[in-house]
Image (cartoon, rainbow, N blue to C red):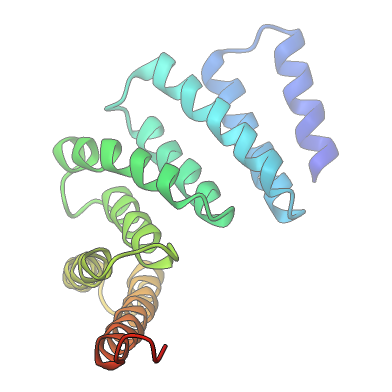
Length: 185
């Protein structure tokens, strides 16, 4: 519950708890705020937590990479697609280098990026193609590494269907617009 998490954080801050433990408790507190639908507060906290992990362990640490994905998810929840894409473009290569392509955290970062591409209302056809291609690659990896019944695989497959639908819809709309004579729109 929120009050328990707030009390835990307050105690850690008063007793000079380790920075690692403070960041963990702040992450738990962000989860409690998220459960209450307080997305702006979650985003504020996720920015602070990501910055904290970055300062404590650097960009290549697992906790920093995990929190980058948490921050990206918060940005997506608030439809801040450009910010999410910018963050993910920086962190995906690091995760791939440090954790490898088959790591669940790497997959989740790439999945978040693909979602940011196809959910953005300003996405171009190229963005939508990239989203579908990324999802297809993620699906292959997830099926090989986790199997078809794993929750991550199922979520990626659902997102792949959505990205294909977005691409199909945009392709039809652009084809229709190209067929409409000027002045008839």
